[in-house]
Image 1: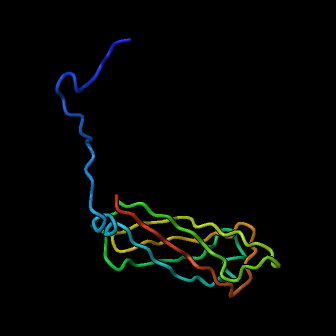
Image 2 (image 1 turned 90 degrees about the vertical axis):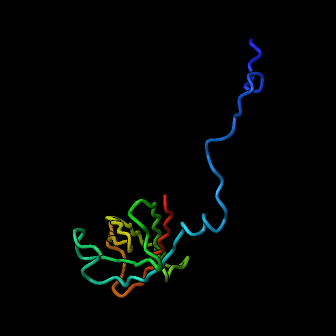
Length: 123
């Protein structure tokens, strides 16, 4: 086996990545929350879903950011049946995010609140 080392050839093996300060990293992250109230039209047809949207406090320069969307059942308890809700059709703009909630089994009762959490990180 050959004894190979960059140091032997006098080369600097510095990482191509640059380290950023914590405030710069935190400036790239935004989070928002909204509450969606299920309506009869949301659960009566699999083709009609609830439209939700959030606006960022500070606009992103473009749509080059990653989004994570989670949906919470605000009235969840271990004694009630679970409600399946999917966040679909997510669309990004520099000013905010919109999407749809899909109820595949039509389980949500009318006037049932769902909390939608959106986290974004600029690429």
